[in-house]
Image (tube, rainbow, N blue to C red):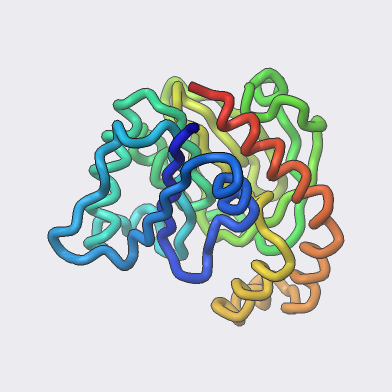
Length: 232
């Protein structure tokens, strides 16, 4: 059986449906990186076949100012160098993009709630999105975006934040969430109650946007994990 590792970087921001699927279909190890004690180390990369790096409200540009993320930064380099499949979600994708030579910038506008993204030609042919429609609904909650690392490919686009997903070699990054259920979104809204107001949305509007698209996102979250696990 495949062995997957999820690195969770913030208490409320779990990997939701991705975590559930991996628990049922792999030997899953979940590390709460923000709880790591001084001197505690990440497990050897060779113990795992697939890696998912979760989000955090900490900007990737501030990662090296936080002890657990400094430690994680070095570990991410080991993962990248291993050639094993690695998927970064939201700030997880931003840290990977930055590690690979890209930039992390402020979003042209904060994205919170339900949006649509579209696959590029490269995205349509990328195995991570095999079987996906050319456009699909996603959930967002972010203030920063990544650029495409040198030598990488743009896989998905959106509006107002154009770059939604990239790939470089064994690393994929997505700024969006498919793994979030309405229950997860409620937990995020409780953790960050003032953020929807910044873009003129209410808590109820954000939750309604998630609920309306949850069935389609749930199906795509499973498909994404199936595709991800097929990579070696």
